[in-house]
Length: 295
Image 1 (cartoon, helix red, strand yellow):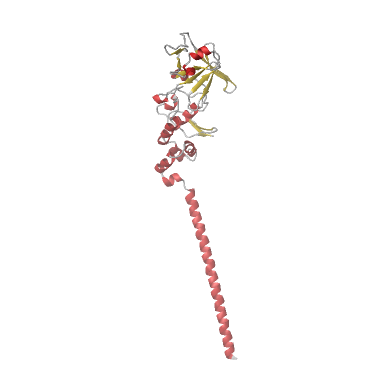
Image 2: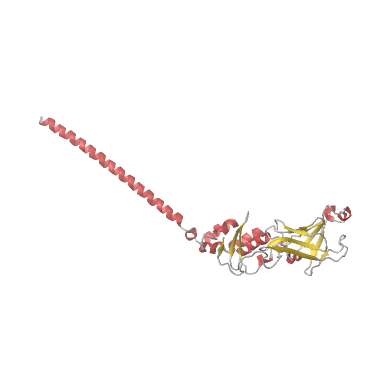
């Protein structure tokens, strides 16, 4: 009897020991899980801290300049809005000088106001975009360029036969506008005939500076409607004839008005305008960009 009791006690002891082992193992497993969860949370927190760090502070100005130089103008312009420190890097002339060269490549005319001495290149880029969209022509625009001239198809055949444009020969006829309000042609021009010619620019404005009419009038001939091409060249036309400004950007000169036309922007502000295809950043106040933003 005693032996049987001892065996039972031993068996019970083994069972208890096994139970204790299982419980201990389970506790260790739970502890490992807790530790893993804690490690995961700490890793996620570290990642969040890393992601929340300012790339400019992490990488430094020089590396950020290299990165921004490889972005398109729109992306660089958006980075101006991140912070004052980002604005200081993203407005660097070393970035926008190259952007200006890219922008001006293939353009017919480069505006005067983009090449003002001491003007930041960011402002030069912005003003170039704005001027390229300008359709209000000035006396400077007329006088700074030579103009190709040709008749339209509706004129009598006699005049078209005198026009190299319709004969398929060159050079085409040219016209020149002068600051005294006169217009001339090349010597020996068969169409010109030596008559006196004068021009005027007519602009009718209504309401809050909205242009109702804008055209160029030459003598008493029909109004010349003004338009702008994608390469920033000008075109003036009526039912009888057409004028096209001769590209001259390759000469290295600048053309057009010395001051912005129709911009209507408070001095010393940085303006960001959203058009259908381009983000336009315009800085006024030639010597400084203050960083004030109007959205």
